[in-house]
Length: 291
Image (cartoon, rainbow, N blue to C red; front, side, top):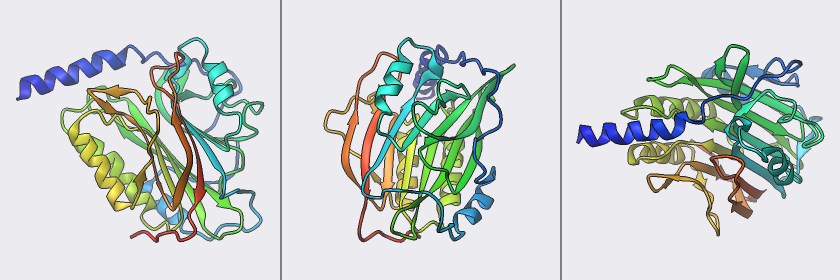
């Protein structure tokens, strides 16, 4: 029923475009990271970098307690986001934000001692937003991939970072995704997810694939499931699941491989049109090897 399909798409556009005025880029924030990790903006070269043997002297995460926050912060438009972000990230080693900006308030060292890795998305004049990954240690690798909204021709970003883990030669790869949204079909959506698979295909350590998937229709859910199957991921579950839903489907997800859930919660807030997900994960003893 093309008429109904178009109506649903336009309804989603109308709901989402109200959140499209970005947070201003402040003076002093420049570049795409505050570290010197090797970087790439291509899925194939990212794949090659992730295959390299890590520096054994690199700072590492405790594999028994990896605390992570995922949140589409709606460009900091709503009152109270600073307070909520500060409270939510108090003990986190990894913070993954979508619709974030290179803003000192979002990358503050007071909040998460740290390193930041940015993949640029929407730009207007001197304003730039995208996906931002904050980490308590310097990443080994930083890749950023760009997809394009077919209708609006605005970019959607994917940020990939890699971290050393204490007591193991395995490394943790973390994907921070803001998926394309305004498409009649799912081909552009699948292409964005396929680039993630390309980048991660040879990685044999633990994985976290997280973000705003915009998975609000069945075809998109099937595309996400294909990514999950190819990378041998599992979806995290939440006791009190307060994730935002569109058309009855949650759009924010965390998928993992080689990790198990210690705690996981999705709490309701008024400071964004998405609700944040907070998790603590630990490394599995017998981790599967992918592909």
